[in-house]
Structures are given as C-alpha cells and as structure tokens.
Length: 218
Length: 210
Image (cartoon, rainbow over all chains, first blue to last red; front, side, top):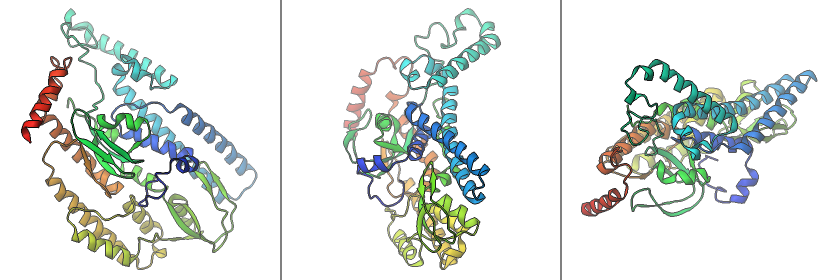
C-alpha cells in the first residue's frame, strides 16, 4: 500500500479485490488517529474484523490442543495480536475523542450519528457524569447567571464553553486516485492531486474526501 | 492552550510507524518445510526449503529470529543503488529522491535482525544514515522558506518517519500562518454567526496583495 512503487493504486477494482479487511482497518485506524474530529464508525468493517478475530482465537486454541508445531501456532498468534492491536487502538482513539468532545457530540446530531451504538451509550454516560461532577463541584456555588454548563454566562448567545475539534488544523495526507483541481476551503486556491501525492493540507478542505475514501491521512 | 489541538491525540509514535512498516512485503528464503499460513491479514506460503517467497516484514523477522529463513534485502538496499541516491540527494536542494515510504523503518528492522543477510552491511548502513541526514537537513532548510499562508503544501517523496517528525512543526506553523494572516477568520464570538462579510473581506484583501 505505502511502498515506493505506485503500480496498481489507481486500479480501483483491482484494489478492492485484493484489499484485506486488515488493510482496510489499518487505513481507517490511521485516518481516525490523524483526523482532528471523530469520523464515521465503520460498522460493517469492525463487525467483520471482530468475527475474524474470534474465529482465529478458536483456530489457535484448536491448534494448540491438536499438537500442531509450536512455531506455526506462535506465528498465528502474532497475526492475531497485530489485528487485535489495530482494532483496540482504533476503538481507543475514538473513545479518547468522545471523552474530549462529549458536549460537542451530544449537542450535535450529525456528529452523534457517526458513533456506534455502544459509543453513543458511552458518550451519554460521560456527559451525564461530567455534568453531575461540574454541577456539584463548581456550578452550584456560582451566582445564578453563571450556572449553565454550556455557556459562560446567560448573556452568551451560543454555547461558548464547549470544546470543539479544531477543523482548521493541518494534516498530512496521501491521495488514492487522481483528483482533479478542487477548491481549498475559504480561498480561490485550487489543488490537483495525483495518486500517491503526499501533501500537508488544511483539514477542512479535504474532510469529505477523507470520509469518502479518496484521500488517506498518514 | 485554547485553540490548539492536542498533538498527542493525532500523532503516531515511532513504534506505531514501525508497526505500519512491518506490513511491507519482503522476499525470504526459508530453510524449513511449512504449510501455508492463512492469516487474518492474508495467506502466505506454503514454505519449502530454498524456495524464495514473499511475506510481510514482521513474519520475515519472526522466522529469521528463530533461524528459519534468510531475508533477501530489497533491491534499493545495495551499495550501488544507495550511492546513487545519496549523490542525487546532495545534488538537488529541493527534490527528494524516491525511496520506499518506509525506508527508515525497513532498513532499521533489517539492520537489527538480519545483518548477516545484507551484503556490505556496514557500508549500506552508513549510506542509509547519510541519506537520512542529508534529507533531514534539506527538510530543515526548506522549512525556512515557509513564510506565507498556504492551505496545502506538497511534500512528495518524504518518507513516513520524516513526515512523522516534521508533522507537529509544519502543521503548527501553517496553522499559525493561517490564523495570523487572516484576522477576520479568528473565531470571534460576535462575528462567528455572521460569515458573509468576512468572505467578501478576505477576497478583497487577497486581491490587493497581488
């Protein structure tokens, strides 16, 4: 995928056929780690990966009880460990983001819909606990006008105490295909990308393309 | 600090970059007979003594550690090829030679675990180190020329490790230029609800500058 040779990357069909779930998972993991905001949960992919991990766990158990040579078993175990690491790191990165932006997420249905069902539950519990905590430790002791959890004071028109992901950050990305000239956010600059072009770029300008899988973050 | 994203959240550790590189394919020559391995990450083998086959680097290293194979260093890892690359790197101030995206990690893993499989390993190692140094120096000098607001910067042929090292700095520098060069874009509570005049403003100003 990321080797110096560029052969094959522009052939979508070919790529689709030869891409394993692990490769896909690696890609979404990297995107998730590098993106400032939380991305759409990859429900189908994660479900498939979970299934494969479970299957592999059973296989390894079977192997070790049926006297297959220990070297083979240990190699299978390594493969399993690597996949599990990817999955865990992916989920953890998301939990970290949820913890950080919980109020932003709970106030924003579009963002909330990017979460899995379990993540939604987690975000809800987080928000409730944090609200209770802030309420008990600080807000209840402040004058009435300053008691809102989302606003600095009641004269604020917007929720100005909600940490939000910084979409103005710059990320490093690699294009997966040829992208004709497209406009960069808030300017008249145009950018063209060839497959495998590496670029440091304003995240907001490419965020849809990351979600669509046209551009990978690295 | 307000308005600054937490770099820890989005950065890859050196170990993670190495982890990514371990999926790159290398050629090994096994010295054992072993059935095909049907991994989650793909199928490899079957393995026969003296029959070269392609496996991911992590598998190659695992087998090598147990003395079950020799690793064939990739083509670019020869004294001849690396000398060419080094010369070309020195000749050009701006352009980076094409090396595998993970050349730093791959060479490091092979030097650590398969030294005896690399011909002229000392020479190869010092060449790779020289290339790294020259490239880093070039990255640094090129950074000095970074002096205006840009929304995108092409950094073709920079390798994974190089990207990872310069990312926090370049990212923040560009972010700072972005903010300071466009005062109307600084999130200002009074103005945030009213975007239109800002856009008009911005366009006019950019025009003036040219």
